[in-house]
Amino acid sequence: MKNLFVGNMSFQTTEAELSALFKPFGQVTRVHLVMDRETGRARGFAFVEMPNDDEAAKAIAALDGKELGGRNLKVNEARPKAAGGGPRPGGGGGGGRGRERFSNEDYREATRQPREPRW
Image (cartoon, rainbow, N blue to C red; front, top):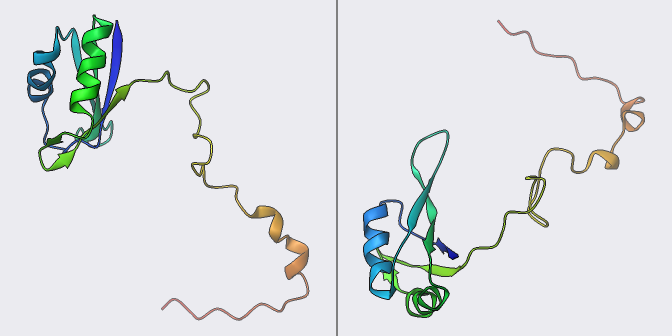
């Protein structure tokens, strides 16, 4: 049983289209189109499950880089999700960056500018 990752997809690609694309290479057990929780729209990638490893390898070789819906697909064997579910290494993570560069002490001697009235 192989789980294949299909990336760089058009947002309009459907599960039926993906299934039809992979069928010539062997049996397709499942197609999972990943959707955005907030908007309900496709996120541009999917997972295709194939029971036969040889057929999955042939599908990867034939479909990686193939054009579908104006986009060149990226097809490879899916890797397990990193444990912890946090941000991926090297991928940002956001909020706490740079806090150590400035502290309140740097601004204690500075005089505050008067605010303009809001009305």
